[in-house]
Image (cartoon, rainbow, N blue to C red; front, top):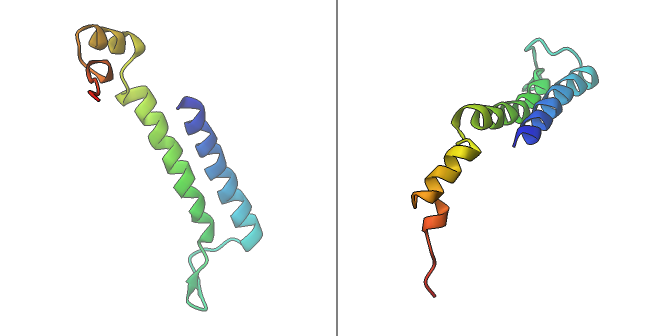
Length: 83
């Protein structure tokens, strides 16, 4: 998850730079019904990467806490499928 978040942030930044260089500065001017801020599409993968990093560092359980929960019968290990 950490490497995936970093890759998404990098792709988002690279996409913003690429689209801004390819399509021009933008500035929010309306041309033929479309705004000139197309480069902001790079925010989508960038913010997904930020969300992944927030999950990894702030919300996910540490491996030690996960092992403790499993030993107490809490978590995926306690759920068994009966066929």
